[in-house]
Length: 230
Image (cartoon, rainbow, N blue to C red; front, side, top):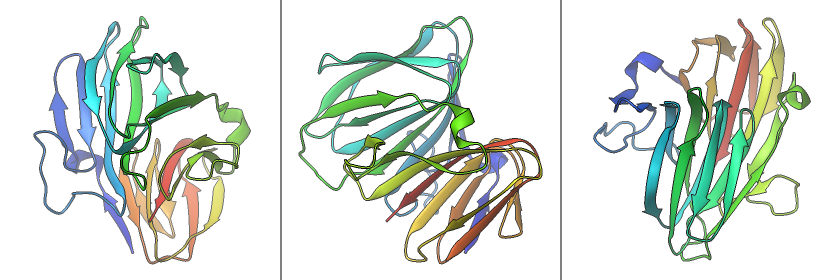
């Protein structure tokens, strides 16, 4: 099954400093048909104005992945961590027993990012944060593993049976990917693509389950972010 969730159908909240699109029910946006996808609970497509951001606020027992699309975001938290994550790079936070954090765009331009929440497999774990650079040139034409539940695979570690992957494709480029039909995959492209012949537009959500193989063909130059979760 390949289900396209058109960008225009996503939840929308414009707070001035934050223009957010919600792939799944979040805050004041509620759609009983879009409460999550497998263990994926939140996928927000955020545009944060220059010199603004999220003030300190709490989380617990959730795996939170931030994929920066343009600009940069600066993180600080109650564990004493602080770091700047730039376009193409990723940060992860395991909220565990509880953590306060803030995310600020300290740049002179808007920042765009995906904020992805995945249900944890380790409730009550010690909270943690990490970030890594992932140059986009390193994933041209293939998926690169950005985060996973395996602490030994060289990517960022989350406490969940999930993988976060990124790729870039030129127009006309193609990627083939094996898939487990029992799992839930969610893909968001920055340009038009087809997935197993099904067409999707830029920033649409593509929900996949029951497939053993994906063939992704770019109709435009496209940056791809994919989560494979139980």
